[in-house]
Length: 209
Image (cartoon, rainbow, N blue to C red; front, side, top):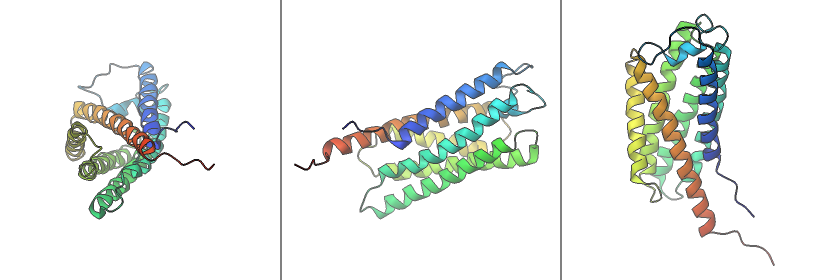
């Protein structure tokens, strides 16, 4: 029987496609000049600045938040049975990741029109997801199947996200952070799928005769 792809792999693909597709749709309706040097990505969801496109961006943020939550649930496949330290690191990764996903959902429900609330949830999501990615590196370094280059990408993503969460004033840094988020999630999802595939191949299901 053909093996189904892992949950983290499927949701990572949908995160990338969903976010980029709806962001580009919102951008196509943005009536003003728009640049990474002078605009936040969240400007696409501001109904005052982008009256005909804001809804698309905010729907994308809410949908992406839900997918990110499922993505972190799927990382359970990296759990190592008898390694309590690794299991703890992975649990913390998932906990912070799901909290970050909820913060993302709320930042979509409260877009830039609700500036104080949006800024709060936006800052929370970068700090929470940055922390989750940092702990993911700490957890995955115990696993032989995790390539070293993925740990470097994860550590870089976590560092940039935490810096942006603290110094929340540089527009271009937000763009870099989101690009790294999408990149790391896509790569980690692919590696999770490879791990799942190799596990199934190594321990095939016995068929009753």
